[in-house]
Amino acid sequence: MSGHSKWSTIKRKKGAADAKRGAVFTRLTRELVMAAREGGGDLESNFRLRLAWDKARAENMPKDNIERAIRRGAGEDKDAAAFETITYEGYAPHGVAVLVETVTDNRNRTVSELRHALTKAGGNMGELGSVAWQFERVCYFSFPASAMNFDQAFELGIEAGANDVLDDNGTIEIIGPVDTFKEIADRLHKANVQPEEAGLRMIPKQEMELSPEHTVSVMKALETIEDLDDVQNVYSNLKVSDEALAALEAA
Image (cartoon, rainbow, N blue to C red; front, side, top):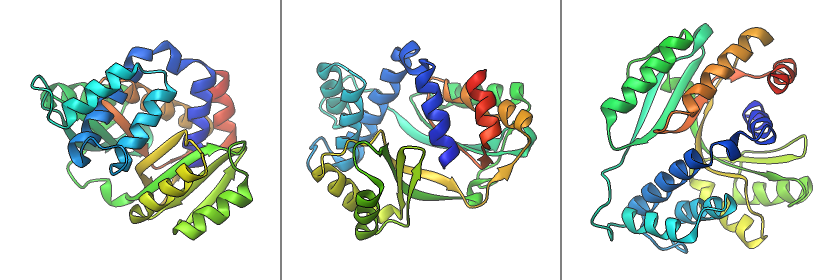
């Protein structure tokens, strides 16, 4: 988990998000659409939608675009595309297990692009259930310690039912069972803490550690997959060491 957040921070520092603003907006739009489709268009009652809204605003996405995406998801826009959420399983180089969450209006295009990316990197697609058993779904929140110190975050998380609260070099992470998502989100919202990341995600039950060189090659492959238009989230069981992170940051 910590390796993921550190790598996300490195990418932000390198300006990857700004350089791919269009791709960021595409992902945010799809998240808004799917959140509104599943829970309706009311921000107060739909916590996934509220978090998607906050994330979109944090990325300076125009308000009109956000509201249009919500209308599409809520079925108020006749031109709404038929998006669906599909999770694919496979292996990155060196046998690293990978789960890829996608939102797509063309599953044939999505699976073709994903298979090509994995194969080119030295990995392969897997059958349904081939790697999913190695992960568990949790709710996850991260925010800078400047927004709330560790002691306060620890108390908030534990009282809300979280399993773990971590301080990873100035980034607070709260991890808990899926059914604690609403309670943790509510408490953070009331404390005026805006998470940099918030949602449900898959975490590995056991991580795989590779040499720094092999770790870098796997992370580059995962980044290529993350850049595919239809991909929303990529999860792996790769353990990212400090040495590998240093090499990634220098790359």
